[in-house]
Image (tube, rainbow, N blue to C red; front, side):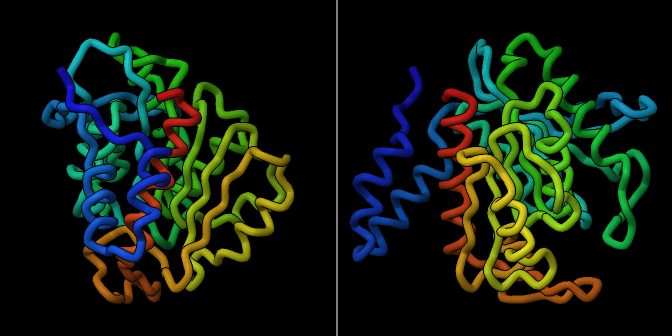
Amino acid sequence: MRPQCPTFAALRGSALRGFAYPRLVAAALFGFLAGCAPVAADELVKFASAGQGDPIQGYLTSPKGRGPFPAVVLLHTCLGLPEARASIGKRIAGWGYVALFVDDFATGGLKETCAVDFQPALPNAYGALAYLGRLPYVAPGRIAAVGFSQGADTALKIAAGGAAGFKAAAAFYPPCANVAGATLDIPTLILVGANDAVTPAADCAGLVKRQAPGVVKFVVYPGAAHAFDLPEFGAGTKVMGMLLAYDRNAAQRSWVELRGFLAARLKR
């Protein structure tokens, strides 16, 4: 029997009201973010891109049980998989979702794609969707795309392109200017730092204004820069001219937002 996790609404209605007590809030957030469901160890899987059928690999982490479970396709930045790749997959599986973290680079021998328009990203995401849809313990109509930076660009393109099998999309610090005139067709969560000089919040604000009411939830974190959820960049690191910086508060709150969004949109 699985331990009972606090619901998103319950957390907001109890522990977060005690914001004056930092230790209580930290403990509540840790338990909420980590998830409570038993999780199987992640495994390396291979599947075909939806483009030319090129081989792609990814890391699959699943809740224990028979399912069917909703699922999340995770899409990395232009720098590749994050250092916390395994813990991110485990966290999302702990929430009750099958998590597939796509590795766009391994099979092609790539190190980074920050200076190019990485066109395989979109067909690779759809290849991951098709792979998940064939698993007997995945609910094929309840799959979301969650991307980070370049992966967030792909998530927004999915949302703007009719989605074709994805039920929702979430974008951490996306380059919203790339889809400036687009209409988003599925529920979308956009999370960005107010001090992001790589993918400015103002571009996303403009995109959000053009969408139908209720389609997009847009959250801006004061003081946060690009890659605010990635601890490997510490208080600030310049990479290829981009300022990347971890912000613990923004990171924790972004995961709370994501969990609540997935629960609402994938009916968990």
